[in-house]
Length: 206
Image (cartoon, rainbow, N blue to C red; front, side, top):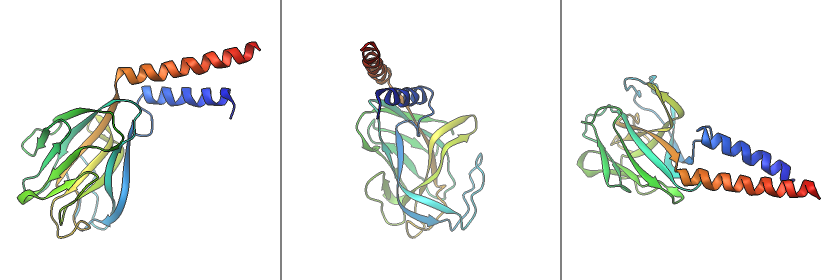
């Protein structure tokens, strides 16, 4: 691979990262299972996802680069239980009593599953990248999804207790997740681009 080709691709990646157009801005949903909705997903502000529609189950990972501020936004719920969302890294939480659009954030720099969990009725938990209690699961609702006036890299839904992790509608507690690189991450990327450009310049002078 030529240095010119490398610089071209690196510059494209940098521009995408800076404009938020990268592959979901440092986040990746890891699919571990699939299921079919046995109830309709029907939260206000979303298109209804009908009975029989497919849903991917799994966990949301941080992939970098550098440090990014990850924000979790409460988007609504449709549940007979009292559910919660915990950002375990920052120790903050989102509740059903919060206004839709309420957010909590934390600075993330370590690759792997993000540190959060959902809690259903009677202390049932679905831990991101970890254990899911019987009847709970985390489902992927959409990527780069426009909800109201905001686009979220990922929208996740929680199934609180429908018998097994494969049954339900995944609208018992819904969050939008986005990530924004810290200034030093941009700086490191620009330094790297400068070094590649300098190297190419020296090559042309030979």
